[in-house]
Length: 386
Ligand SMILES: Cc1cc2nc3c(=O)[nH]c(=O)nc-3n(C[C@H](O)[C@H](O)[C@H](O)COP(=O)(O)OP(=O)(O)OC[C@H]3O[C@@H](n4cnc5c(N)ncnc54)[C@H](O)[C@@H]3O)c2cc1C
Image 1 (cartoon, protein in one colour):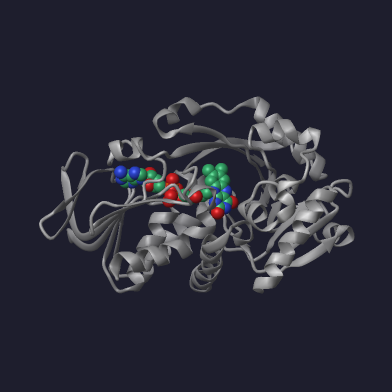
Image 2 (cartoon, rainbow, N blue to C red):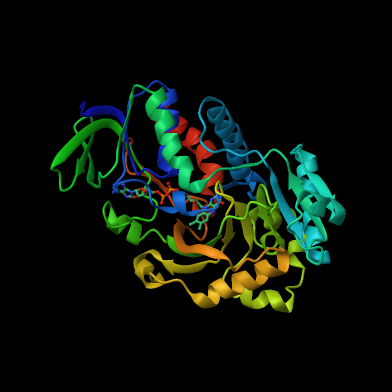
């Protein structure tokens, strides 16, 4: 095997993979190294909602660019893209105000939206309860992917398409240093070495193998999210990305573009849910099961392990109660539950370090990686190579 590359990408999640993809499009050779037997980080534990409508400023633009990238790859190879749109369902007057304000913003920049009244919501999404749905905003151009499939298929696609792409699983990188005119990357205490012109570290929430001191001082916070999946429910009509009232009170775009966000009151029954960072999203999976989540509990990067390995029954119950208020199928018919983790920063949209002109770190993209990584990585690669 060739041991020298233009770029070595460390990390096999979505952020690393799109850095590899955009470098390959430039005609450069790429080695991508993933420590596990296959990716098991945030990239496979999420909803797979690709929702630029929830982002602000340049992150919205990255998300929109990402829609085109996913769609163009899907035309060549099935990476599980479903073009069913996103909907945010308002359940009270304040949430209706927010979605109308968001529509006004997107109208000014020409991003397509549609307001749905209650009858239109129930026609399109018969599984939503009339008692919950007041009004909704729909984004027809948005897509979703199957999180447990997408990254594997994207890797297959890239291996088939790009001769200059090498992907190695089961390859934990324990050293990455500038040496001579390039970078030297070592696996398992340097028992195997590779060299490259540059290296990009997209390590997700692994902070102990490379540059632990840097990450220890980074201010990064890790979020633990609880997720649930129902048994297959082929008769439940709930296609696309389904986001609900609490999401309108949480997502960046609403916070940034809706003036009323500062004055709306929090209804009493939301108080306990907000304490656990709960907002309810639904996504129908490839096997017709429904993914339901999520909650957020935080710990700083040096105390990540204190988030625990267990799932809180209390948090799941809070989510199920709120989910049952929204949909009319039995949300308690669950087949599995799990925890996902992602790193984020309290004041930055992503954490970047350019250690010199050869070693670059990109991590802590937060809860928007499935949406924004494809577009962000295009910009990031342009800056690194040009
Ligand atoms: C429950 C949940 C729901 C979410 N829902 C959505 C959603 O609907 N839409 C959305 O846009 N975003 C969503 N997100 C966020 C999104 O999943 C993340 O932003 C994204 O997956 C982060 O990708 P990543 O590549 O940075 O990290 P990861 O997916 O964690 O990948 C990092 C990879 O690097 C590898 N690695 C680390 N260190 C090394 C090393 N030294 N050597 C080799 N390999 C290494 C790890 O093994 C891992 O595979 C959600 C996240 C969670 C947890």
